Length: 314
Figure 1: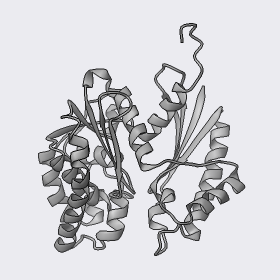
Figure 2 (figure 1 turned 90 degrees about the vertical axis):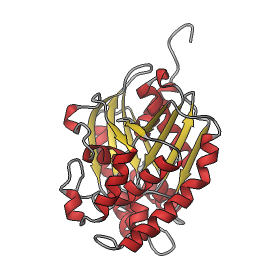
Figure 3 (figure 1 turned 120 degrees about the vertical axis):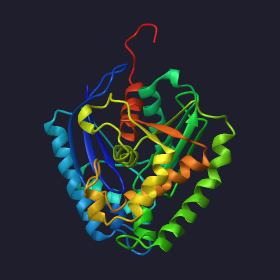
């Protein structure tokens, strides 16, 4: 079957069209996205401003038309932290539904962590043993760990790269004092969940799944995206320490010139590196692998798992 997955994130709204069937490997067929940056369309009380809501309605309508043109049997549409935390989130969703017919489902932070964990588990397989998965989005950091497909722990913290850049890194480049303040804040927040994660045992494999981790790994020398999803990519914590220092001294335009860094994400990459550094340090991680699968793939896999099996023994 052909599925469309519409992911309304804090930075990007992304429609991914895949060909998939139960028990099979979802094959990407088409991608359509826009950098709406909803996390930057917030009023002082955290509500989505009229411009952000308008842009969201327009793109969802466009995505629904694209999904239809691509022959999708079903459109799975969901939203994450920007909508989840907005005081007017329900009203924005109602406007989207009324104007486009698309019913966006809001995922909790824990749901994001669980679905991302599922995708990573399926990608790396059972031979990876106990997994620890870190995902840095625009609005939040998700952490999940476990031995099975359902993690023992699934946590979400308000440590997204876009959010932290907007709230705590106003300069370009930011001042040394602002970077130190960001580092202190992030480490205090991450420290709150360390015991809850580590009490279940040390992971056999640690995985980073997000554009932030892919970009940081690429700067550190990992294979470019042109080599495809099966090229192994990893990131050492020692590289993260150096990257934080390096990125802190660069203008946004200079970061955008680095390998694997898109101009639109260049400004928030420093905050992402600070979060990655803190999480790996406090959780005792020396090295992590980078997963090409994350939340969208987790949503697809969960949908496929819910299909009725034609196997007479199923």
